[in-house]
Length: 291
View 1 (cartoon, rainbow, N blue to C red):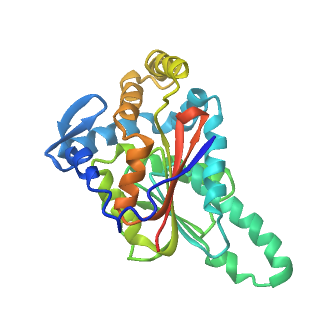
View 2: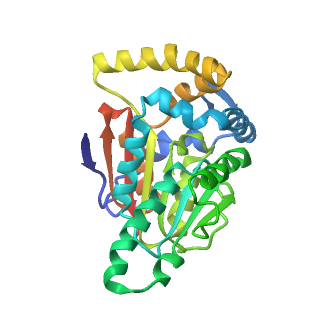
């Protein structure tokens, strides 16, 4: 694992201007859908179709594609968030609830230890974890999983259908914001980052877990072979959908590098931006604070 602190104070030193060139395609009338160029207004519908198709097998495919490692990656994400009882947290593109359940379990564990000393039963009751997803099918899977895990009647979990680029939450209303394997699917990454910054309170923490870029030559060759030859075939076998998983591996290659994405986060207004590579850069966790 590699942890890198990036671009502290770059905004005040005016060192982020090159970013505008690297991200100019995000402001055009066309955008990428995997390796295809499509009109901006078409992308959200096409991505929606992908997740409608894979919703029922989404978590199973994550297990198969990553060999179960996605569970450890999400645990790492939540540990970096450091959840606390009474917090207001927003998990975007979190429809199946995988990250939200982990956050709630972490808070409950912290809360039980704290209650021994504080004796304040209201703190846990004040906790709210908002699970926001643009796809209602993914949310339905999450709600079903919540029932199966005993969270069905838990008032701390709030399910919201919404767009990462136009969130339905007030300014400065959240203590934390997470997005796992979702930000590369939005049409305008910079708009999603701006919305994340807007809804966070001062001192609020932004965390993004995303498939990223492998640079080690031999490992990169193996990873590319696995991505393009195995994952789409696995999608066809398990989910009956090769095209959606072909889009997945292509979308990862079109996503900005770890360094470029860190610059975008800093340009959105976040401070103390850093990232941690996991499994040689197969995934990366980016983080930032709102001051």
